Amino acid sequence: MKQILIIITLLFPLFSICQETYFKFFPSEVTDEVICVDEDQDNNFFLGGLRYINGEAKSYLLKIDKEGNKVKDFTASNNNQSCSPYIFCAGPNRVLAVGYSDSVTSTGLLSRICVWEYDSNFNLISRNCCTFGENVRQFPQECLLLNDSVMYIGSVVAPEDDPNLHLSILKIGLPFDSLAYFQSPLTGVQTISDLIYNEIDSTLIVSYGGSPFKGTSYAKIIKLDHNLNHLSSYEPLVFFLINSSLLNFTDTSFLITSSTTNWEIRHEHLITAEYSYDFNLINTIEIPNGNADTAMTCGDAKNTMVTDSIIYTVGTYHFVAYQYPWQHDPSWILINRISKNFELIDQHFYGGDAFYMPYDMKGTKDGNVMVIGSRYDSQAWPHLYQKDIFVLCVNNEGLIVNIDQPTAPKAQEAIVFPNPGSNYLQVKLAVQHKNAIIRLFDTNGRAMLEKEVSCDEERVSTTHLRTGTYIYSITAKGKVIGQGKWIKN
Image 1 (tube, one colour):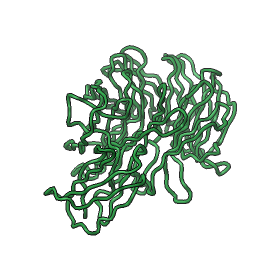
Image 2: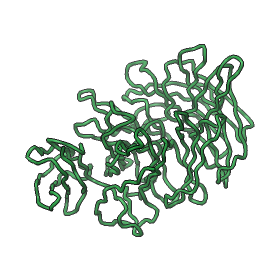
Image 3: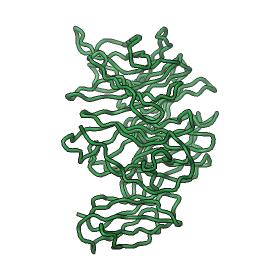
Image 4: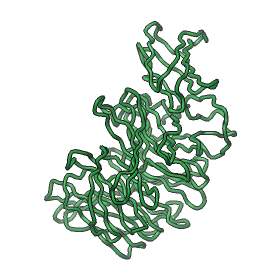
């Protein structure tokens, strides 16, 4: 069993008090991944994802309480419940899990879309499946539940006699009493990114990824009516990669958050755009990432949420594309707070001790912000090439503050990488800091380096230092904004 690693604690003053903020992960001896999270009426959280056992993906469901403690988990015990990563709390003591079930027919392999209904202790209440056509494999990738009575499921469809993937949308009237179905004639679909429903005109907006038609964007958008009749299609003029997330913003507009690329330096970074429901671009904001390939959006699930005054987006900082998904360089979960005028207010970093990839972001009923995803520790011998689930819950200022656990990890506003390093280190400042001072000390407390940092990301030479372990402290405006260990090889 892997041991839980204590993330470096930063000594930040407490700006507000909130009991239910935390940063935890759940070690196991196999690979666990979660895709989505939902909260029930008792402030328990239900996470849906996959558990990989001997190379086979099985449905995995996890229940935690409001303090982030594990209450119960569930792994499917047979192939008929192999994959149900999407989960919804639909009414009291009722959990819906959505996925697919494989079966062998006389003419080939068939994948059916299924909805499992459980109680809050994961006891099965009902199971309903459907399919469209013979020898068709359907892989649900995004789900949307409306008013606990209507569900839309976006899938990639792979017909046995067609090498091209298709996009399909399924509408289910719960409890599984009516169906509608849409399959796009478009081919080259790679992934279904997200679904949102516009209640003003009763339309469904679908984002999916595929090869550029006009050479402008990998993200595509289609609009359907509530019965899945096709209304229009659009390819954004802004360049988005395929992992885009949609969110209703105003009565007349929605948000897209994704990765984009600076073609001059070939580096990915985050972008959020506001579009009208008629696909007119209104606003954009790009999140700077210095001079390194360090940022991307959080996969195929939600990476954006909105409160009355703030837009929150989440991504991974210090992402190394060629190492994915088994990145041995540590990364940080990056939460950005953006005003509704599309101005970046502040940023906070979490992690830095392993590779973190967030998958879902959601506001909690007590006003906090929750992020879930996967954590990979390349040093966790003997459990190499194995992922665990993390859960990060911060207050509305992006901070982890818990007076009952004063040693709990806090948000960082400045980070150092690569770690370990050699002849240099890079200091990254959050946007709220224009300059800072980094100091390095040896293990005996002697000052070995002091350097002023005057831009958002700056390289600091360490060629004069001997190999070994150093303690770094980054200060700005009279407070410590980053602190930890740095190793020189």
